[in-house]
Length: 294
Image (tube, rainbow, N blue to C red; front, side, top):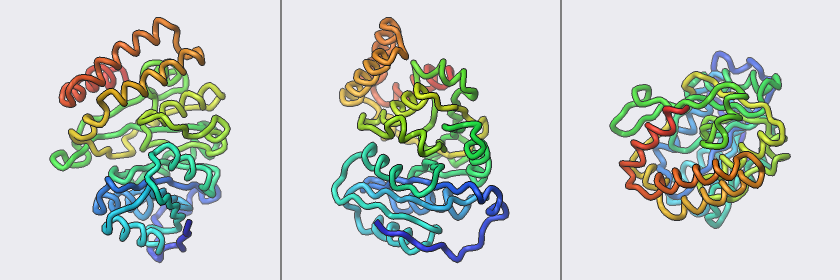
């Protein structure tokens, strides 16, 4: 683990606002990421923020190609501000890497960001007051899709319910938060068990446990993250491995009395169809079945 000093870059106009409430931003990095996208994502979550994080926690999941090693070196050198580089020599997967980063984060409040998305400059300035004041222990936001063909700010929106009551009602059928847009109280997440291994659904499981433990939840209506979408994304969300995760999580929800047996079977029927259709059909199904309900 290495810690970087602060960058010499000037602070944004609102950098001192809420400075008594320090927060960290956790960004995982693995060999499948691209160096140019990672640099843009890291800058958007640090240097370009009106309210900058106190610490960037870069969680490196396994060996990296040379271009990404350059990005890690830049983070360690403080190019993106104060940073903690947490390295894992072997590829471990997202859940254990995020859990280690959550434990290592030096601040009571943590935000999540991904290495191929873009945070809007006002993101943390809008989210931090709600979490720091105690109005929310877990706070998300709206996303807007973009890709190489669709510029940021022009793609479809990804909504989620806004109030705690709406989020609780939404939980049994879909994840009520967009993971790359979340800010949360670290101690509340850790008290609920933190991230546990469940392929591609580790975040959904964490939200469920935090809600059952009494976490106060909300989503902001503003678009605070531009979310990269391509055909590979929907391809990764299909197949038998993903369906196995669905089955496990639905059994957990039923055991925790989040769903009835009838609701569990209905959810599994829908997820079986969703996971096993081609990626292009999965994208359409997401628009019709998930976003419309959001």
